[in-house]
Image: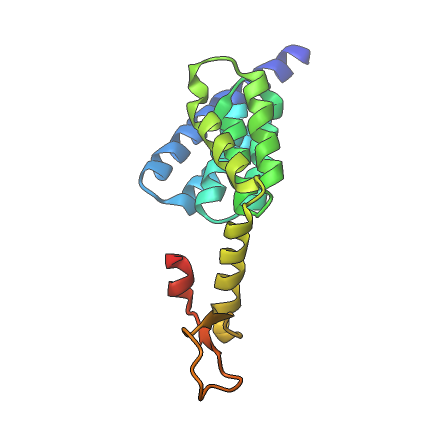
Length: 188
């Protein structure tokens, strides 16, 4: 009976591998829905194949399911922590969800576990995330606030600018208010 169970497990692994290859073909054809279906079937046949979980993560990212992509990448990294692509896929999915700190943590975890030249993309993503998470200078903050205030038809940022030397006939209008547009703020 135990020998029969082993044979069935091996047959399931072989079938999972075949189905995964079919999924790879569909992915190459940009038929992501069909690839997802095949990868899911492959994962059901062999839940311990880190490559199929990584493939599921990547195809889910292509389909915009970043939450599912992050979970599947986590599963892949749990099964094989030495694969930098699993950590990268998780980081990209988390970044797309707006979780830049979680994405940075995924990059750092991957770089701790993988020590080879295959980590260039992971290192690059880590640098981008560190830059995104770094505190901004006061000027950058003010420019961002000015741009934000002009979005969506909201109030425009106003700055008081001197008009030049006051003339005798000027009363309280020694300054004027100029509105800046989003384009002006970006040029600044």
